[in-house]
Length: 371
Image (cartoon, rainbow, N blue to C red; front, side):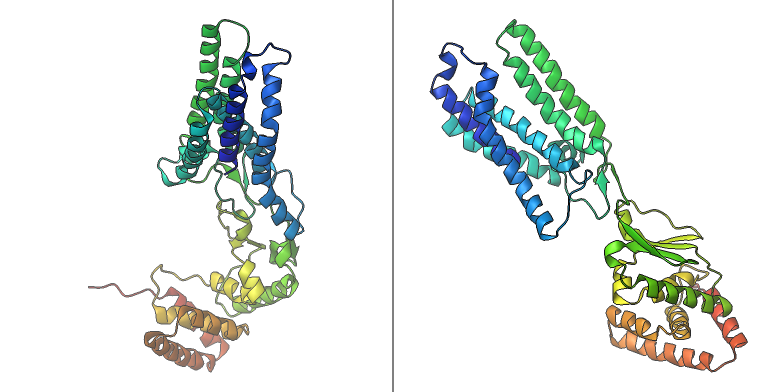
């Protein structure tokens, strides 16, 4: 909308100057200065269209913008200037009453519909930056590519409008600059996927405790110390019971990674903890993660029995029950739950050594192969 506003109103202002025969008057001021005076309110309005929603959102959330956060808005401001120059050039040649509405619609459609086409490079060079995930920051090249394309065309038009030099030479130089910008943007973005180059992890994190040390975004860290203590105790209990050997040194929230999910290691686990910390079942989720089944295809009865047994051992039976309720309570699930509870109650009545043998046997049991 901001780009279409800039192009359409610039076309109108250019046509107004042309109909007033300003360019036929004796030159007292530079034509660039005259154009700049006419385009100043147009560019200011397009910047307002671009920046006002951002400013309102920041004000409502009482958030100060960062330099990384200003990267895309600044690129958008430059693109508004480039689209205004393009609209001004169109208004110099075509009747403004016809050209202005056509240019407004054409500019909007050209940019907006790049999201619906393949390959992906048109959306990356159009200036429609798409959605940015939590903790993600687009690379400088992501912001520079659409500026390179639109800016190259705009600079080419400015060169073509020079009041001196041979017209043929100006046309050649302008074409070279414009084509260089377009091809440079295309070649840069041609191999990009749906997501442009970006970095992640730009989030203020809060950490607590040790063995394991747990980290989540600051705004969700109110219950973190308690969750860390419960997690450390739960993992200790399960290790003593022989259910796991997991001993992570760090458990951090992968929500801050955006789309660039970093892999976990034996000593550093990355999990989506944000909602779990808030709802109180983070410890249960981590315990489930610590139970390593031998096979990928685990019998449902074995899996649920292992999870319920572990939940009871660490005092997280309510979290297990809530998890099952979230998955639905159809007749099959209810029957499975009865069998699982009967199995676990029987095991819990056994001595600790027998329970250890049972959980290891359960974790190692695979689905029988179909004949």
